[in-house]
Every structure is written in C-alpha cells, then in structure tokens.
Image (cartoon, rainbow, N blue to C red; front, side):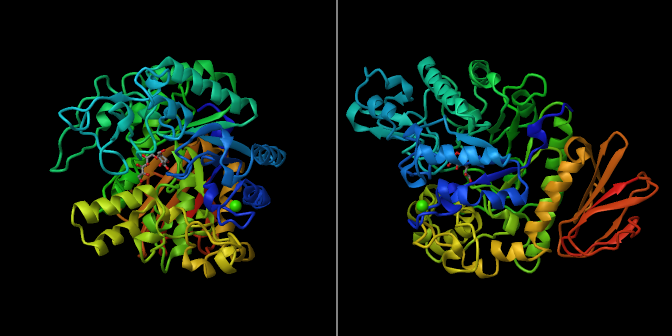
Length: 561
Ligand code: TEU
Ligand code: CA
C-alpha cells in the first residue's frame, strides 16, 4: 500500500455542542474546544473531525445549514474558529471540517428564494414536484420518519427531504448548485483546513423520474435507497468536485457512505485515482442497528457476523482502497454499550474495542468520550431527548402505530443517537464539569464514576490505554500497512488475526465475551520468540502464547519474531 499521512493518522471526532462549554450557556462551543486542545494533544491524536459548526437553526444540530460561510452563533465567531485552527496547527493537529451538501436548512437563503415562485432563479436549487393524485410525488420514506416530501403552500408543490423536513435536498443536477458548493469548499480550504468529512455523500444523485420504492410492508412510506444511494451521476459529480477543488490540496477526504459494498468503496476511494481518500461505511454497524430503522426494531449481533463483515472489508480493500475504522459516532449508541459490556467489564471491554479499531487496516476514528468509556444513557422521559430522529420515530411509533410507550422508550434507550450526544464527562463536579450553566441535554448520571479527571489520574485507565495504542500505531508501520489474515475463523468468542508487513508480524487476540475461552494458536503460525506490545490485563510478557486461557474481554497484541 502506498504511504500517506491520512493513513497513518488517528482521528478524533468532536460533536461541539456536547464537548465543552466555555461561556456557561449550556452549549459546547469553539472556545471550549480551544481550552481542551492540550488534553487532545496529550491523548496523542493527529486530526480532529469537527461536526458542523456553520450557522444553523439546529433542527438536526448543525446538519441543517443556513449559511455555509458563517459560524453558528452559539458556537462563537469566525475569529474564534480561526484562532482554533491556528492553535491546532501549532500543536500539529489537523482539522477536518464536516461538509453537508446533500441538503441545506430550509432557512438557507437559497431555499427561501426557491420556495417563493416556480420561476424564481433559485427554484431549481432544490427538488420540487407536483403531487400525484393528491398525495406525495412518490412513496419514499424520510430517514427521520414519515414521507420524504413536504407540501409547500406558496407554490403548491412538494419538495424532497431525505432527512427532516427542515433539510430540503439540493438538486445536484443543477450545475449552478455544484458551482456554488465548489466555491464554498474552496473558501474553507483557502483558510487552511486539512480536509472534509462528507455527509451522506453517496446520496447526491437521484434516479431521474424519482421512481417509487419497492413496497415492503403495510406502511405508507418505504426506503427508496435504490433510487438515491450511489445514484447514476454520483461518480460524475464527485469526479468534477475532485477536478475543480479537491485535487488542488493535500487533504483528507472521507465520505460518509451508508449502504456501500466493498465494490462501491473501491470505486470511490480507489488507491490510484479515487475521488475520495477513504470511505466511512456502515456494514458492521448495521449488524446491530439498521440505519434509519424504525422505533420498535432492535437487532442482536454476533461475533461471527462481525468477523465475516470486517474480514471481507479488510481483504477486499487491501492494496485497492482505504477505509475508516470506528465503532461509534454521533449517530450511534456508545460503542462500549453496543459492542462491549457497559456494566461489570466496562473498562476491559472498552480497551478491547479500542485495540480492535487501532489494530485493523484503516484510519482509526475515536468518538469523543469513548477514550474514557462513556456509556449509553437511559433518560426516564422522551421529553429529555433532543434528537429530531429519536423524537420523530418515537412519536410515529406511539401515536401512529400504537406501540406501547414503555417498549418504545426501551428502544430509544438502546438506539437513540442522543446516547452519544450527552455532554463529555470532564470531572465529578456538577454537570460533569461540562458547563456551569444548564446543559442543552442532560448529562449521563454516571459521571461520578466515569469522568476524565479520574481517568487522567489512573495510570491503568482507558484513557492511558488509548494513549498507548496511538503511540504503538505511530511506531509500528505494520499496524498501518500490514496485511490482515483472520485466524480461528469459526470461534464464537475469540476474534484473532495477524498483521504482516514484510518480515514484521503481529498477532492480535481479542476475547469478545464475558467467558474464559482458551485460545489455541493454529499450527500454521510459527515463530521463534514473542514480544508483548499491549494487553488490557496484567500478563507475564514471556508467557507461552500457544495456549492462553483468556479472561473476560481480554485483548492482547504480540509481535512474532
Ligand atoms: O447521517 C446519515 C445517516 O444515514 C444517519 O442519519 C442515519 O440515518 C441515522 O443516524 C441512523 O442512526 C448523517 C449525519 O451523520 C447525521 O448526524 C445527520 O443527521 C444526517 O446525515 C443528515 O445530515
Ligand atoms: Ca457555550
């Protein structure tokens, strides 16, 4: 594989609203991030992916943008942002900005114009259609519940919104839209940013005629992905974007690409001439949480499935394309709650999951708070939830489908995006040290046991374990570039694999269970001696690794010499 800084780096994702509040209004902000940069430097990360900080009415916490070239008032000013970027660069930390161009806010001036009249010059910036037989133009379901169409009185037509009705989809067929977007991207790049994370970038191109989705249930609206995921003109649009903007900068570009196969990913992030540097795909996440799933559905996952999916991605992309490694973000439940054990083995399993994402091929992404093992939250009332998707789906389930409210709330507890959006737990003081005001969303009540101050004081903490993993990755090219080989393929509790780069070989052993299975090294793997790189329990470094009785959620990495 070709060497590149964006393959070697570790990314830390910040959801600014919940990171740190510098002025007591209960909302995290840019100066809050500035104040915590030393902490991030100490953790050792190289890049920050900053979720949207642009002007927004916050229907979807910044993913509904009303001005791409202004900072959201609650977050600060453009001057604050510039200071943040300068300080980051001084510390050697790069900045990747979120790019949300599948849709804008309905309060963006383009949309304000667009909705006024059918002959408005901005009309074709969005996707408008007359109704069909007194109903929506087609049967597509919005990711956030209900129809993907909204009737708009002034012109008596519907506009398309794959997400909330305050997020109208842009019409990428219109060259003027594309030109405006490219100019805006260039404006940020000229300010010196180091890349873009591109929100639902594989949904830009819709199939002409916008055909109905297949009817799969008695519901009125259905998932229309086949008509807008990796649509007919997607590659053309992204090739143009690369040509006009991206190719002129040495940047990290990562496409958030739900529903892609490894083939799609290779096309998008091809090692030689891809339009993006890497994809951020969801197949492993979808094992336990269907994207856009309705309230009322939860899905158990199994280690064998996880292995199958991860292994396929590792193998198919090898020498061809680059991937992102993550187990949680701002749209997902907390990784330790979803893939580990957030009770008795919280610390062990959080370290195991960290080992997992750092030891695979791909760029690791740490979501804020995962480095201290923050967990899901279970608010007592739906009123405590803020996420538009959670609230819509709860309402739809309870009011329209008659789902028992307690059951619906249980699903919210397990799956709500707000699990990841409670404030970062800085210390054991009031409001977890996040704010001295009233936080926009409640803090997780477990902050007295789980917080950063305690993690920093404890040499054995999850934080220090992450620090060590990041350091190891920096020192060992085999972790970044080595090829992946699965061993013990059908073991139901142990996930083990090797990474090989020329003469250098690592063995990674992960016990994904609360039990104590025995690890037997396959005969095919031979070596003269071993060196222990990291383990989440005390171990004798000279231990014979041919047979190991693993402890619950034990994770270990050995060099085979
Ligand atoms: O997410 C895209 C996406 O597919 C998710 O909304 C997903 O459907 C949902 O989170 C299921 O859990 C991106 C952003 O990451 C998300 O925060 C935005 O809400 C969304 O796009 C719209 O911009
Ligand atoms: Ca604030």
